[in-house]
Image 1: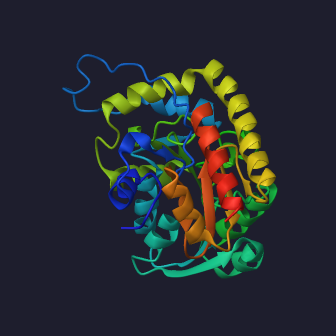
Image 2: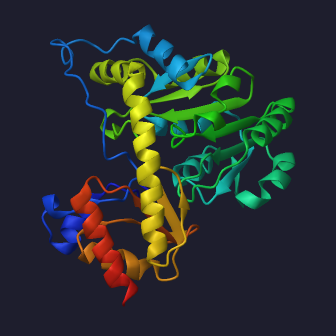
Image 3: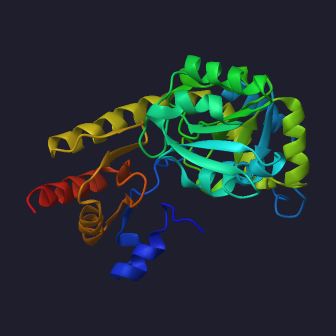
Length: 328
């Protein structure tokens, strides 16, 4: 199993600091989560039959013609490679490691290609997978260019898979409205922007025929009843969404400015900042010794990713830890 952020109990075991004394900045998940309503009285009793209203609400929120609810985009990431015969697959690198991990199975020929070289790779693959904006670097590809690539791939029965898990604060860049065309698959996550990773809920936007195939593969009761109930409320709460986008953009800029004040030039999104760090392991260890858990990337993206602190006390602790790091 691959390593991910959010593994705070690993920090507890390694450093002996109680769980409640840690600040977890390792995931890029919104620390100001949506106030989930209580589930219905029979939520734990009934089988979670699919509520059509959830897909409708998702189509409105994500501006997509058809969407399939899934148990987190991870479920789709693991399933999509099983829907194709062995293919030539290019995954943008560095990016969310689960994509390459699963496309590397099921007989596919996998190649990981840097973002700057993707335009040349499009003509030599059957499937292209990109994160937009990218996780962990925040790199972006213009929607117009992605649609051009999608047309090339569709012409030879290929796929363009676009993971927009961190796209909620950049909705103008989404390809959701174009996802009815064959060969374009868009993944969206409820966990990041709404801060509800524990729901294990995401959506896939694609041509209806592909969504039907994916639904058959995932099987019945893919999304829990309580998750559907909470998501319906969150997707419909436009007042909360507008206010939260404004708040996250402000806090994202604050994090970038704080890092810059300590000599760190970063990139990212409203929810996280990333930078290539020459002494990445040493920085990660220093922050852990300060009770701050950050995401260390040891391989393709050798660097550090920081999510947003949840409150002013956490901002102060981060500033103090950055100050002491600067003087090491």
